[in-house]
Length: 521
Image (cartoon, rainbow, N blue to C red; front, side, top):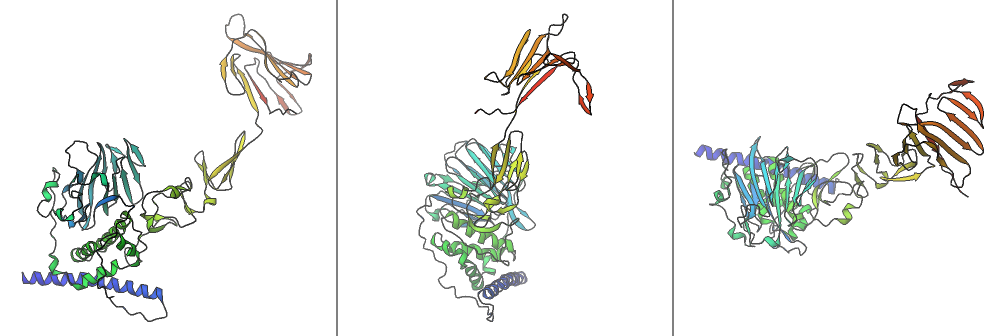
């Protein structure tokens, strides 16, 4: 036993040394940035009385939050912190009224993957609509989701890093994949909740579940595993406290002291240094949770990450921010952030003066460089396309179209099927000469068609002849191919003169009349 105890102490000292080395590197980096001409001296700062516990409530913040993250950490709606070190399925939050389909019921189960703690499955039941979340799939009432969805008053929004689920009662569930799960409840549910998230009565002292975790376990067919932590008294000392105080004293967290009790997060940080065997992501999950809890409480966290400490990468030219608008401005919605009423969130965002290109998927661009899309083709700003009757130019993500001089077309097909200039179709079986089109003032142009039975043995109608009158000149087309000009025989089709071919069918089966727009003085 003495040998094991000594080994545990030595290992804890080695893990702590990793964080001290990282801390020294960060201080050297910060010193180099502030003044490269000075010699760098690494000194642990005096952290006396740094962690404050007096919080000024934010009058605009009307939600309570419960969250679970990282190394089995959990914070109740009333602010009690504890750990649930096992892989069992638990009810996090639900109404205590016992109804089968209440406003909300959120369950969670963890698993261990490559010595890291992650989520196995999250089940969110909102008024009978069930959303199931796993690392590679999102189901809504057993149907897989690939895009943002609204069903039965339940909204599911997706991002590259997580999922947000809301209902019309003000319940919000935020899942950051593999990292954290957070539940927001409005004040109307105060004192009505059950589960690991507590009773939401404003008193955190009655949220202890040290001997009562089994009450909120969900029975499963498979077994779950208890995780044994190293006793904290074997690794906790003043050095761990100093390291965590240093991290939490970053200017990036300065506004968080105004809205949160940071002392509980300091203890979570010390637990991570003690239990996580020097695993870098373990402490990063807690520092990230501090930043997210700060935004949910109405604070504005600033940049605290560095290239050495919990770095984040974004695709293309997007930038990672701890506090950005959840209503992203894009080429299709450039003013979305101006209408946003939600608190800020962390993630990848476009720099000021640019919007996200959700058309061409090219990252962040100035609004005046936004592309457009037509018929599944992307056009850059300044490019255009032309159709028969209009030309459209792409300007800053918007189409500007100009109508062109466009011909109108009327057709007679099969001797009875007629389509007007405006696209109306009808069937007409005639037995006479009919004016198919003419100028409204009886001048300029006229087309007359002879519709009659095809022959004595048939009942259908044929277009037997067409007469075209243009400015006093009359051209007559007969079904047998003869063409006359002003009553004089012109020639018989088909005919070829001077390389120009003139062809017609022996029976006129279709007539198409194409007129350009006629302007009136």
